[in-house]
Image (cartoon, rainbow over all chains, first blue to last red; front, side):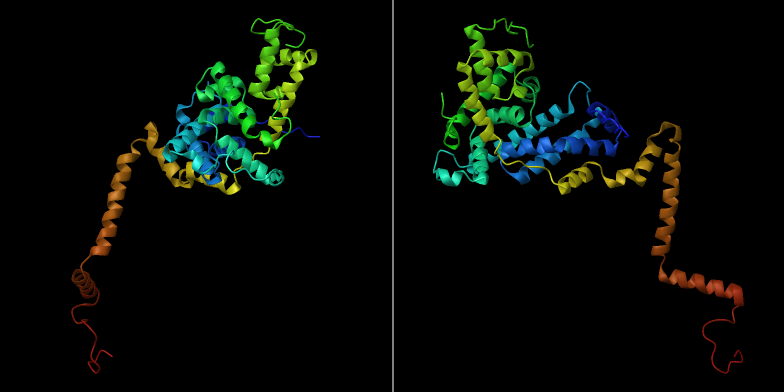
Length: 187
Length: 165
C-alpha cells in the first residue's frame, strides 16, 4: 500500500507564500478558514459577518506575507487578526446584544428549549451576552482547542488573566444555561 | 507528569491546595483533560481519582461542556473560499502582468524599460495617426496614388462613350 505524502507544515507553506505562491495560500486557507470563520461566528453571531471577517483576515495574510516572521504560528496569528477585527465590529455596532436578546428575559418553555436547534440558539445567545474578552477566551480554548499559552498570546494577556476570563465566563454560562441541564445548577 | 506527585506550582498531591487548584482547572477549562494545561493534567487526573469531592465539580463542568457543544457551527462554504482566494491572489497576477513584472523588476534586464517606452510611443503614434487622419488628407493621398499609377487622365468615373470603355 502506497503511503500518503506527509502534509507540508504551515511554516513551509508560509515560506512558499512569501514568494507569492498562490497554491500555498490555497492550502493555508483550506486548513484554517474553518477555525477563523467558526471563531468569528461565535463572536459575532452572524454568518455573513463571520465570512467577511474570514475574508479580511486571509487578505491580510496575503498582503503581509513578505513581512512574515517564522516565530509566529499561522493559526495563532490568524485568530489574533480575526479577534481584533471582531472587536472592531463590536465597537462599530455599539450595542452588540441588539442581535442577541438576553437569555434571562422571556425564556421559552423547557419543552421547547429541548429542541436541539433552539438549544443551540440559546447557547449562542448566552455566549453573546458575555463580555467580549470572556467570549473570546472561551471561543479560543473551548471551541478552537487552543492551549492556554496560545490563547493568551492571541488575546495579549498573561496566563493568569486568561484563566480569570475563562472561569468568569464559564461561571456566567453555568448560571445562564442552568435550566438546560440538571447538573448545571450543582454547587 | 503522571506518577510525579509534585504539583508544578510546588503543591504536593493530597494537599488541600492541590484540590483547590484541581477545582480551579475544572472551572476554568472544563471537564475534558485535553483542554487542561499540559503540565497540570496528570496532577488533576490523580486528584480526581483520589478525592471523590472533586467529582461533583467534574460532573457539573462536563454538563456545561455538553451544553456548549450544542452551539451551532459555521463552516466556510466553497464559494467563500473561492472568493477569498480570488480576492487575495488576483488572476492577472498569474498571467501576463506577472511576466511583465518579473521582466521589469529584474536588474539584468532593466534596459528593456526605455526600449519598451520607445516601442509603446511608436505604436501609439501609428494608432493615433490612423484614427485621426483628416478625411480630406486621406482623399488627397488616394488621388496622388492614382495619379502616380495611371496618369492624370484617370480621374473619377469615366463617362459613357468617352472611348475608354
